[in-house]
Length: 123
Figure (cartoon, helix red, strand yellow):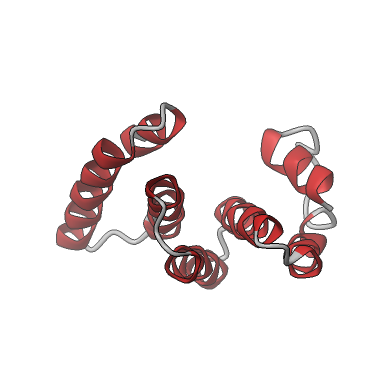
């Protein structure tokens, strides 16, 4: 995804333009499959820009809830990781661990994927 590439390079403004276009296209096509991930990446990009934590938190929580509603476990894990990192950085370590704890038991394979390794590391 283009926006994620911008995120990895720290190009928040360009990434947010890509997110806006992707959300617009998804809305026109009535396609919701990527909605959770788009919210998560938007939150990460806004975090780079220095948006206030409550606004970033709202994007991550929305991503988490959408992924749960869609039963999209990988997107749910990614949203939980982003939220946990934010909370950890805000000194809310217990909440960060709590949001990640359920995930490790969900997966029976792919336990060495970057997302699961990060979740275990953050626990």
